[in-house]
Every structure is written in C-alpha cells, then in structure tokens.
Amino acid sequence: MKLKKSLGQNFLKDSFYLDKIISSSQIDTTQNVIEIGPGDGALTNLILHNSKSLTAYEIDNRFSEFLKERFSKTNFQVVNKDFLTVDLNDVISGQIIMGNLPYNVSSQIILKIIEANLDYKHCIFLIQKELANRFVVGPKSSKISIQSQVFCDIEALFDIPPEAFDPAPKVNSAVIKITPHNKYESYFSKYENLKKILAICFANPRKKISSALKNFDMDMAKFSFDLNSRPEELEITDFFEILIHYEGQI
Image (cartoon, rainbow, N blue to C red; front, side):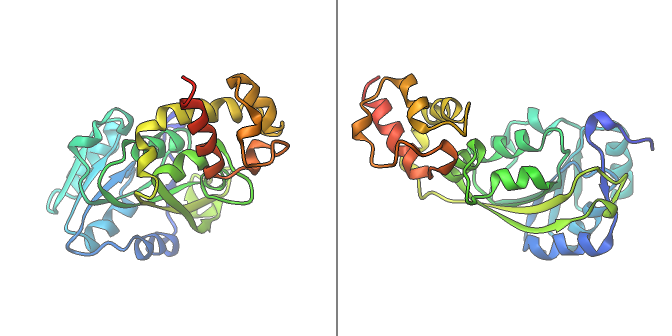
C-alpha cells in the first residue's frame, strides 16, 4: 500500500528496536493494551503475543481492514477512527497505551491523554526526538514539559535512527515512557488557569520572566524566584507560585 505523507506514516521495521519497545513496555499476558497508529502491524503482532488483548486505533481505512483480516483469529479489535476524536473515558481503564505516533500529531495525542487525567498504567510512545526533548524534564523547561509534569513523569528510554524505518524519516526518533502521578493533585482543578499563564510566559521564553509577569499586573516583590530568570529556567513550583498569586487577584 502506498503510504500517505499527510498521515505521517513512517513504519518501524527493525526487529531489534521492535523487540526493545516490547521489553520496555512491561506488558504481560494479563494486560489489556491500547495501540495508537498500528499501521502495517509490525508492533501490533508483538503486542498480541505478549498481552491479554489489544485494541488499536487506526485512522487509515486501508490498514484498518488489513489488520482486521491479519489478526482475525486473535484477541484483537481495530477501531477505524482518528484517536484525537475518541472519548477517552470510554476506552481507557488501567491499560498500557503504546504506539509509533504520527509525527505531525504526536504532541496533540500525548497532551490529550495526559490532560484527561485518566486511569492508565503507563504509555510507551515512539516520537520525534526533538519533541521528546521538549516533553522530558531537562536543564531548560518548555511549555509542554511543565504542562506534562502536572499529571505525569516522562522519561526518554532510547533513540531510534532513521534507517530503522520505512520510509526513513529525515529526523531521529526516541521512545518515551509516560507514568501518571497524583503528586500535584491539588492543582488539577486549576490547570486551565495554569495553561493561560504558561502560554503568556513561554510566548517569549528567552525574555526575563518579569517581562511576562507584567501582563498579569502582579506585585513582583511577592515572588521567591529570581525575576531576572527566563521562563525556560524556572521549575514547575515557580509557575505554581505565579498561579497562586494570579488566582488570588481574579
């Protein structure tokens, strides 16, 4: 089948990396799994051999029909839908979520899952390495790394080179693990206001945070962090501090 560039279809073919994804996923024969973007079924086949059941979401009808026929004698269900349109409350409960995510919508899929704050065990996703670096907590913060930290821990597991795919993408890839937590549960109800703050602060991430805070008309003397810091130099607790002062005046 001819692959559709518009759907970001780059299929992982290298058996070494496919096996490495399975071994890092911690699935076993008691576990129900969700796969996003199964494509030609290379990873799907391995998941089915190591899990209790698998529900896959495939937007391309051609591959959806192909997978339905290929795995007709297994505990497999394929849903021919765009995962971004799926009501997660209907499908996720204590499951492991996996997938070689389409590069063009990877961040949207990840944020959809973590922001829903649902009961999933963890996610194992193959995404563009540059995006993985933005999600994973590092020396510099990003808007999405702060958003993610509210709900989960994200760690980079290993990189995968372009030649492991067909067709080979022009970028490097990485496998990440997302594990939900409740350590910031008291801020869940304040998340929408936090997103507003982050959007303004990271509009110019290399400018001083004091410049962004002028948009909120706050008393700068109240903050414990260095006002000469850039937004990318701040930690999540610093943004929580901004949030508390912001909500105190609205």
